[in-house]
Structures are given as structure tokens and as C-alpha cells.
Image 1: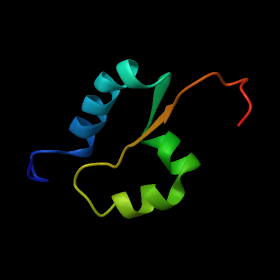
Image 2: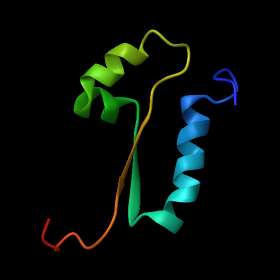
Image 3: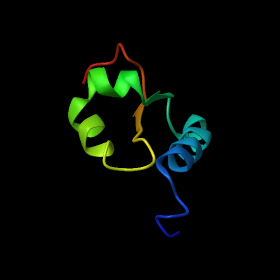
Length: 66
């Protein structure tokens, strides 16, 4: 898909829609949460007309040994 058709918003929506089947949970970081938690991503994303997003997936038992 061309990048012009696949914005960060659409990609994150698709990833979160697919997530429950594959992952334990997914979290979306954007706007202020992205600015505070991931300032480099936020800073680079300011150059775009569409704001950046970060989808963070985790899986498995959180109490399990790593």
C-alpha cells in the first residue's frame, strides 16, 4: 500500500484490530503520551502533517520468568 494511503492512524488502527488474535494486549501512544514517553518519536513526527503513533504489544503471562 502506498505510504500516502497508509497513515500512522490507519496503520495503528489495523494493528490494534489484529492484535487481540495474536497478542495479550496492545497499547496506543500518541499526542501527549507520545510527547512525554517517547520524545524522539514525537519530535521527528512533528515534521509530518499527520501525527505519529506508537503501538506497543505485549504477550504471555507478565509473571512468567523472562
